[in-house]
Length: 240
Image (cartoon, rainbow, N blue to C red; front, top):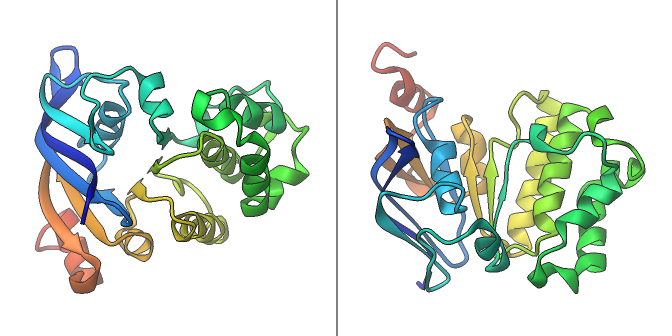
């Protein structure tokens, strides 16, 4: 199968602090992958490096057959590789509709603004109901919906989601999970960072466990371990 994303031997971090150490992951066309592991071990740093917000000190990143190592973030967005950060990064004084329309500013997304907006409102009816409401007045779940909605306004060829259900109630988590699943079914491949491995397995075909900035295990959905085994991955043999 043809490769859509290939991260090969990447080392990156912040100034003199190295976070990612010779890390490699890949994604074929038509599949979605998940990233999990302890907090602070490099998952978000990996997404930021793929998005061009951080420049790797070694290794290569290719997307859709093109080398994007060290490319500018706006060029990566124009190529269709879109990251949705956690929902607390929105402009609080902007209304929902204004925020979504602003997100469609890239060259690749301008012509599809109307259809993308309808797609977002179909996925997240709450945003349609709150289109004149300021982002800062939304609930945590609604802000996360708006963050994902902004990413969809960019017409993604690959969508990366950073802990989309963090801090949400079980009901909102199910609601958001259903929406993310519908995005994948529509043909948009996903890279999803989450702590809930079973939730990840419901959305993706393969998982990478990241620890200390390295891939320490790859899991295929067809042969995924049971709950207790997953807990042992996190906490060691004492977990039960």
